Image 1 (cartoon, helix red, strand yellow):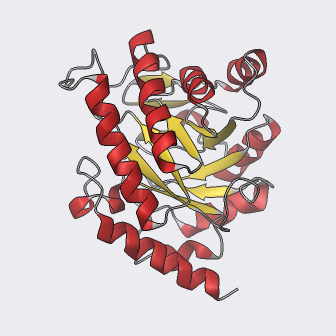
Image 2 (cartoon, one colour):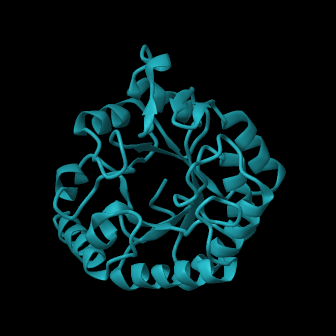
Length: 269
């Protein structure tokens, strides 16, 4: 559960979109420079009062499917460790697209607390191609390398994907399968980055599993109250950036607006 990881109930996790990593088409900066930039954003997030962080390689477009090379694993482990040291908060990692075993390896090496896994249960078609279930391989790796403390937060009916091949499996049934396959939390999103989920989807996921249900896209200071009673936490990227654009740097005023909104909502309890 999230209660034993975060100080606040219904935590907000800020996303650090690390610059393009070595070997990717847009790569320009050294690992050292990328680490410094990521640590700087971690400090802004910490000062703004977020509850945790997520490191993600979103600038590595176009993404590889289901695996990345050792250069990405090594670079992200270094960068994530710098973020963890700077933030002194729970930190996780996601490696696009669907590179979940590599994310687990990075988390274990860098002393992180969780990973975000797409393609944990069932399959879907993303723009990278067919993403298949990784649960069996991922959890066996976690046990084999002694990373049992690293939690798996699994997306269901993930954004930027077609789910026609599982059209006869509801979002709620997918959430139930994620629980059955031993994930630690469920993530519900809208259709694309920056789009909020449907409240009906959040409630369906909650009704079909006992895991924490986190919202993984489109949450802002203006709409968080609409989801607060139903969700167990919020992963926020685009809203926290200058102009609300994911590729920009973190805007301290946006972080403060969100944490202030959550502080007011928590005070009602």
